[in-house]
Length: 311
Length: 300
Figure: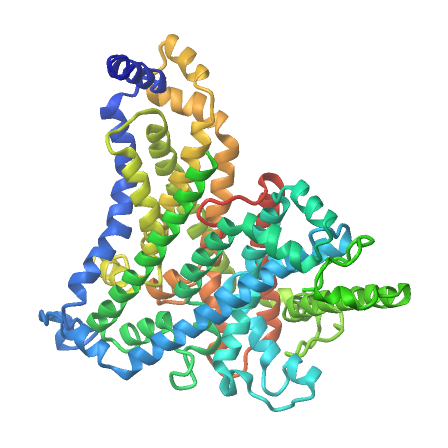
């Protein structure tokens, strides 16, 4: 059996290859076709990432003496970042931001909307879905101005509605503001993902759960959640990655007041560009890239396991 | 969340609670209506949460004297004339268009060449390459790589140029584009190319005359997707374009409300609507025609 396989293997594979390459490209020309794209990706995506390692070990500055003649300082930047309270404060804020606005807020609200609307048809469903989607699609700089207008201290709509004239939401509650804002912006993704996941739950299973008298809550726990476990994982990892990397809160609070809403993305920007410490900024970027790598590897593992399992 | 009330329930599940008498018809009715009311209230709150900030965008541009408070507008279209009067507004929309179309053209050309070769020829290490590309594009985000990107573009003298922004944005979306396009090309039957080859067409001719026309839905999807990505992107142009003449609408919009005292709300409101409508329209078009798909995420 295995001998036959071994004998037939190469021949089959070669025929398969020839049948694949119907245009007669050949490997060399295929390489030429792929090369420009790879060059662009290499130069503007891979190289910056690798260069971060070197830049993070220099005292590069935007202006002044160290801008012309940067010195190699080894791991000094990392050491001073890791001993700097501002860095840990920023990392802590990022953790809260990702957990509360992404993992909890967007996922729960998105799932709840998808679950609540799963049997609803007609205008109510499309109005809600369209609004949630619109919040996602509107350009970030417009979305943040809409929230600046809503939360304005003197003439904001929120203060007018709640009768809390004079409350400066963005200054008194900066973290709460950017968290709620991010939930508003990003819920659409979870809603879309979960409504397609819920549509794929086998109706027969729901039916039999209902036959034995399971309530909504029991159906959710015993039938739905086990069925969409893969989707929940995918959603959580992607949302974590995106929320971790979003720069949009900068448009709302610019990290302030003081550093109270300075999540890592904003912290890197203020350190490197207005602060001028490019080397230091690069060192923190490298830490951020490392965290991204861990999340993305987790995501790809889950995605592979899911596609391998369904085949 | 309170879900739909169930159809007439069978007797209560056996358990410690069975000792209590089954709820009377009246009680069940009350519970039914109560959960119905709760459901409507919850949906109302969701609706209010998403609609409230959005209301300003649809009322203020048409109000003769817009304030930050949402209110019934004193209808006018005069605000839109302000866009033409502003020194930078129209230019910024043009810049956005240049960035969007430029990135799209670059990405479509390079992406379809690469995707086609990867789809039809088994280049050694292809699967590893695709895996690495996918991984890279999700790790090296504009945020995490802003410092080296800024430094790189400064060093090669492309700071304050549209081409610098286009190159960086194209590098960022190309892996995803190659992925999507390879998917599309894998699903195209190979018999057309085979017969074209029998008639003596060269590979490049086959690509332009046979593959591109058949892959058109995929290319259209990628084109719209790329423009939507670039149109709303704030960080990359904000980093790399420092003069108001070169900035796209996303960045100019931000300077409208952060620089120079009281913002001009007539200009701001009209401008944000004009700036938002194209992406909203394109997005819903794509969503309607191609549905919601997962290609490592539709938006950033």
